[in-house]
Length: 475
Image (cartoon, rainbow, N blue to C red; front, side, top):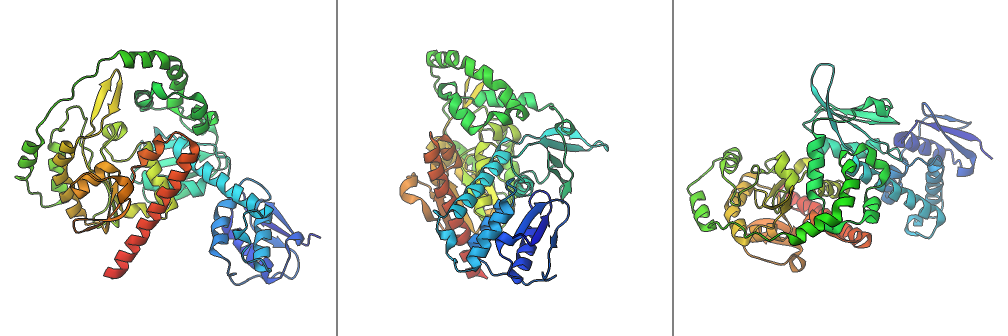
């Protein structure tokens, strides 16, 4: 028998749901006596329900399940969550530890669906440059998520594009960032977003330059990048042509004669650096920015970014093609993966400093494409003095080597990642060793990628705990 009706806001309404749960549990209302509806305003209809009710102690795992599941578009989500809560509170405290239970299994599938939807939004949303009525620059993106994930996904873009003014428009609502605040807005339509901007030709050119014709697999491509997102992604317009032309491009690559790399003497360059003695990070960055690349070709030096006194300093290998074009570290696909794992591991992006062991993009030109080339040990030695001075100025609590090149730079000698993954001291700096995020992107199948991602996430959670221990010891 249904004796109470709970009406919650459109979309995800976690606060309204928690309040309703407290009032229902205080009145001992079983799940089969509650009808959950979604509409404007939160309200409870029924008799004998208290106006106020104290917070209900629940397992942390239940709280962690509620947060994503309320974002699901299934209209039964609140009824399922309340049923789970009722059972946990009435004789089944370990229910969440039983994945074979049909209710737990269904809710876990809903959580995974939300995680995938958030990931798709992080990966496939594209901003277009436009101007507001006052002539100020604003970047606007249109996206159609499957679930009510706008609030769950927006913090990623705040961290990523904190200095930009941007808007994300969806059919169920919009969010607007002005550099200080994230504001809620009404639903929008595709016509409210710009069709393109002046940067799209460059972005398509970049995508074409990094597209590897030797590894074309349309089935895997559609699995990783579903076609329903293509119409809002400028680079997707180039995909049909790239697939058709892949066999001819592979033949051209095989026929092309390899060119010998340019030789430079790193000892001479290192000696000249010791004549420089910057007093601040800004002075050091000016020296780096004014220096010519050891290997010719890079557009600019890509400097580290983040706060002085950062909790964690992440050291990668070298800038990639996109980092070289934009002048910022980790802005390409590897950077997006890095942001995702930090978000999931609750590592505060605002307290992280990100840099590279080598400050210039090394590549080999093949037609229109700039193919990444791994820096040699001599080139890493060339840049190591800069990196160590940079870390002296930043003074991070924990320094992290992302990949074997960063480990070579920080340890001062070549070491394998597999045997050294985990905690390590870099001279007198507390450190940690893990893989570079691009390693995960190169894995050939989803199972291996999922396993590697879980291990990567565990690494970042361990880093967060290390920082907490270091800060507690120094308090």
